[in-house]
Image (tube, rainbow, N blue to C red; front, side):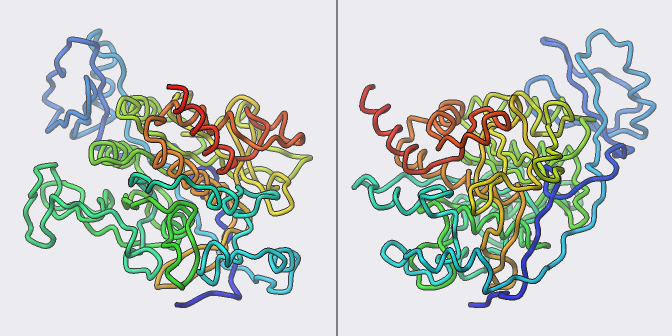
Length: 451
């Protein structure tokens, strides 16, 4: 077990985790084409190949996206044409000094986690407390006697270190696939997709590949917050005890992810059993956004809840970044099966960096100074709405595991209806409160008893 006691990883990703300077670049040979109902894909010599994504939506490969878009602009059989946009390159966050004798650590010294968890670094997880946290400890003290159902949570991010001591036992494994035989055993379109897919590296046929190992710490940190193995005597405890992590490597090290890769990852997750998708990523502008939005809406039919970080463009109470006025994506989509998460800090206040929105940001969750797993068997802290979202995903997974009748849109509603009210958040989020695992589980129990 390794730790980085002197490093604090600041995950100040704007919506997706990184503040993007440019969202205008697009793939020169890709085009999304959505036909009107009942219409077949248009024919054009500029189209070299096409892939039906769902319904009447296609990803087309072409010699020139610009020329094809211009050619199709007046075709009345088409609902819309969208280019395949990149998010925009950004520099990755850096390590900063962690003050072991600081106020946060002093506060945690007075809280005993050992009654519930024997993992030594769980004592650093202020989000587990009832005061200003998610009340994870209180929830675990009153869990139903029955075992929860397993929930697959997809982490769409930079990949996950599936060899990490605190993650290797909670990784989703595709039981229908034989590892390393070079065959698509389950006929799902992917070869050797054991723990998920990597849309950043493709084979000769253009298929996403199987190496989901993390290229950057961010995805591993997210995964640990959700589901790090509990009571194994090492590291930390994840919020949820019933999760298998599906790794979707979609965000490159420069955070310049491509819309088509995001769409493919969402569809893969939903088609392979994930009921929660954690998305600590996004972009400033909405080019290509209709495709991503339509995909989120599509997977609602499979009971999938998409958990999205609100972004980190604020500079404190005097300068909140309101996404109702200055929209962010995917956070600003109106999809009913998507929940948008702001970040709070250990003293209960809204994190100074967190985006807000009375209409667009649903609820707050701990996101400052979150201790979790990172690559190469290590642990460290990070801050950002990127860290708040996985805390929310963990809460959602617990409720879904014990009460599987409550899923998707219904799960979102229950989480929002059971927050801990925070008066200062009244005009900053839809609910004006912070997620609470204990009250969510209690409400789920009552709701299912009435049925």
